[in-house]
Image (tube, rainbow, N blue to C red; front, side, top):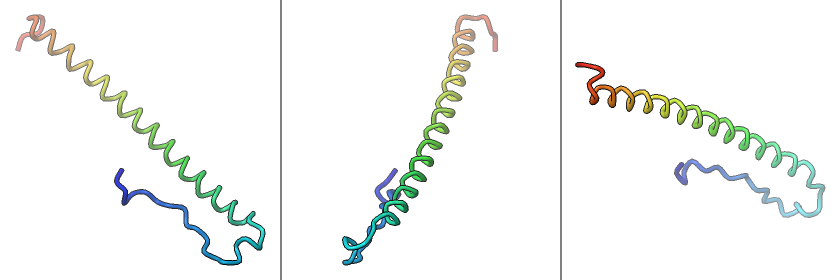
Length: 75
């Protein structure tokens, strides 16, 4: 992930920000953060699936290579 891919929570630049209820702003920030967390969890699951698939493929490849070198499988 490059720095260009990082998204920042937009900040309120309203000077009267401290004079009003922050509930709306905090709710929006909570929704934004929850969406980012869900996206990262989905990416984590996807990467774990890819790691498992590559581990299985590596195990099969190594097994076939060893059997070929040992002479049990002829080319």
